[in-house]
Image (cartoon, rainbow, N blue to C red; front, top):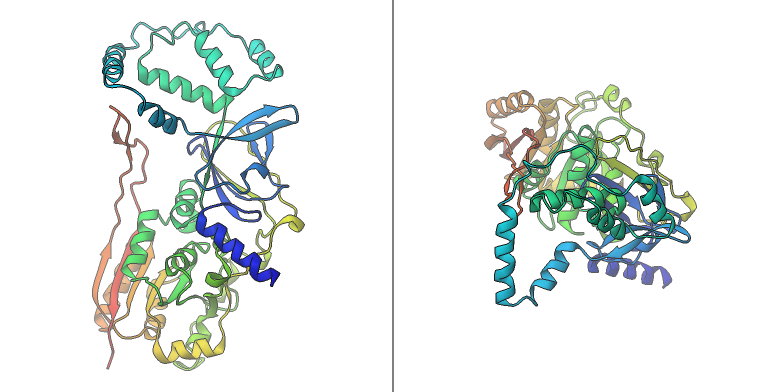
Length: 456
């Protein structure tokens, strides 16, 4: 009974968007400068700059909460705060029409200035490093230090409003770092890995991932056959969209399953984890082809990473640093005894379920295996689909998909074949500063999609 209550409470916390001890979270430090995956525990610590702070205050808080690094008698700690834009929105409700008009006029006057008369000779700041350290020893908060720096700057009032905002933001990142508590979902996880460790997910961008799922028609009560060699991101995204209905069959060549440690970051409940199963391709093809015709790629499998049991089950903090500075990021690991146990996803599929798939076929097929030969893989897996089932295949390069598409056309195995190239442009949306971001990913890979037809 106690286990059922615990599972019910866990599901309730997940549905209401509240963190709990043992769950994984994505910590956004200083508006994307660093992205950290962490597993919440009283023993978990996060290093920001040269200070280690506990993640205990994050337990029981809703996703989207904003925290600021403060220094107290017992050392640095994370204090929950309110986002500045939310404060501005709350205050704007109480501004009368005349006050708003006066503020608009003053804004126009400020924006008409420029920075041509400013001289950067490092003499504008009246506070020295010793003065700032003295303020820290006296217990001054980060916001107080920032206001003191602004008050002692001889050029701050002469700057434009945009320059003033940049100055304030730069000092805030140094003296009052902020941590945003984000929910780890398919989009946030894909964006975080793509920014720093794109090779771990096969350079799969978030728009390509969404297009991959849509073209495969991933919907509730579907049985999806997945070949996932991108760390488990594709498997987790499919399971998230299914929402505990249907099955996700993570298939693999040889005897060693491909690692899918990213699935643990999704915080799936027991119901969804039971729907994520594994099966080797040889088991799925056992009754369809003779053992001599089943392809074996042991050389590829042996080059893969260890299985999930050997992966970082006890790792508390995984740092994805996006800053180019000299700041080092040392992570304190959570002891394995303090990590809460979750239902493991990816158990071996039962023989009864495999027999049902062999008889009825899968609802769709999704492949993201850049290290395997695409046509050989598709040729063996297409017969496992039911008639009129869609499929989508991702690859970083065009030629393997073009070869696969040509062979499918010659073999009359599928219709509606098309190769799509996803295109994404990210914009900065700010007052008087809306423009495309200067540093964007210009390439998002290719996707081959189609519909399987009967060969008879």
